[in-house]
Picture (cartoon, rainbow, N blue to C red):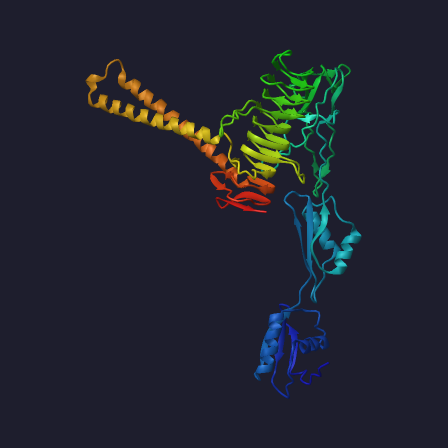
Length: 543
């Protein structure tokens, strides 16, 4: 400890405003001071519990050590303990912030209690013992002193499927617009009277209370009924919250209900069975032979192979075997597609060659696609992840978000066209709209010339020709504006290109042309694993 011999030369005192003053009167020998020595002097003078301003304390030490002149400096003050209670906007939480006393009066329990009463805080308070513990600590920052009880909402009416394997009619798509349709499942059938779905009634919630004692009423639960679109379903006669199948068919999960699509099962489709058209689901146990046509309003299941036939469905098409079309071997570069598959949902097959496939969502092929025209609005997947099969050889594959295969192209350099990031139909639609706009603009110019001529030669206006010309001009202007709006909408779809990918898991061969959005890249040599993306408007590829 530093021995201070000048204790009478440097003294401390409180003025009438409770400010702590350091007073130096010259005389006698001086000993160099530091902050520790000053605090020791304050302790000997019983003033160590006062608040000290650290900057002022530093200034005192510097002034004292560097000057022989007398001075008086304010370096601190006596402070009472202080506190503040903040209340959240929703009146659910109150926080206590408290600073300790410095030589003054500490915060008391009664002060806090009065403040709580003034603010109307009567509910959710911590215990008296907890408040006393905080007071003993002497300081607190945003300490929760009162917490309300939130209202607990009841459960809305719930719908529970009783057929776990049932397909959902709405595909689950992630934030980039990609869905996994690899596993389309098998045909699930129900019999008349089978339970489909249970609706549980809504439950009541529980009232809450804020810190002001006000009761909080929970949001009413929604008593959502079954949807009115319950084709093929019926209510249990003894229980209106239980949905049963009214027919034999395929159950389809829809929002707040289940539809049952009527289903027919046939051994195969050939000349003897004739073409099939059914407003439901068609289950074909065997093959679909060459030249046959099958239409289903919902799904088509084929247990065998489809040979150069036409299938169209409003839902999904699932083929356990393959798709085989016809090729014209007499023409070196022209493919004659003898099979056509189209649906609004997804298409899955074991393999496909020389066919045209168009799907509203996805195309999934297990083994290979050879010389096909594949078009999907979402994605095309050929092969299974980690597998060795999964080839796209020749033809074209167009999808909006993703094309993925184990290998693309062949050692023989067969031309193979791969396109992603662009609605497969967008360019065709844009070209048609552009032609319509150009035609209407030319007609618009012709009508304007007619109007100008009649206005300059009013005697030529016979049978209201001028009014007719003006109405025609207005119609053309409206039509052009409509086409331009459609054009902008289609161009906006191209923004998806930044999320699109083409994934080659093992080999990309010479002769493959890749397009993402409006950018084109051609393979002139074999590459290994490659992932194509669009970065800064240009095709980027890496492994």
